Length: 335
Image (cartoon, rainbow, N blue to C red):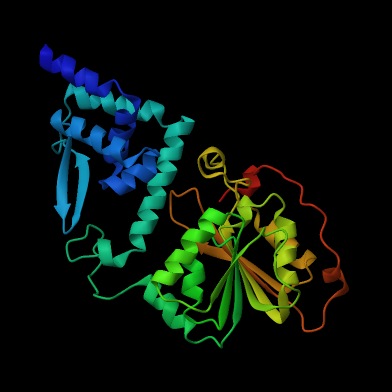
């Protein structure tokens, strides 16, 4: 009876049940579970320790990484696991569990794009280990094909994309409204000894740059934080030189409400038509919107949009756009 009582006490915590449900889908390391559950890493480690002591979770070592999985033998259909299976299935429709599932899909996407860590001769999906294969290396190689350009990274955050662009650009300006975030970005640039980046504090809806001062304006996962995305696109177009390009990476409209509270997103993605409309309203030509990445079962679809500033300014580009009207995602917007 003491053993049963201890087991039920372990299962009496909602966070530990969420953790078990996540591990029923796949094995994960502590960092991945921290992102999935939205808990502090110390809390996740403590929960894993209790579940491991109770015989519900086991760990596997894979190189320098430790992964956790359910300690459920194949074919085990004991009453405890049947109970958990039923409860997990019942909870599948709740908002919190749907959010966990969305983050599980995002972790899987990151894994698929991280060959160095997850590709090996014994991987479950059959990929072959290719030493040195890397998305980052390919992006840098493609950058070498570009001419020297002046770039602005709008909403640069901690500067990872800014510093990547600095590898091939003539100069890069990183703009963000947070002084603390810019300080971390500046420190990262100094550690990497990058000298062709300027950091400016400012809002993407009022960019602190002169008209026609850059060749490329980047808006990477930034628009959904803007109070007026249409105005932000207009500002990106304003600072472009004739012939310059706006490049946008953002999410297609979705229904994952948790991103508002947890990540501070103002917008739950955008319809393809909305991005096209804002690019056109800003006086840009040849707008293109296409899927950047999409994975089966993942509620998040990344859109890539681009457009070019005409060599001869269009009259419409001289007028700021009307403030964008906020609207929630509709079923037609869903990926």
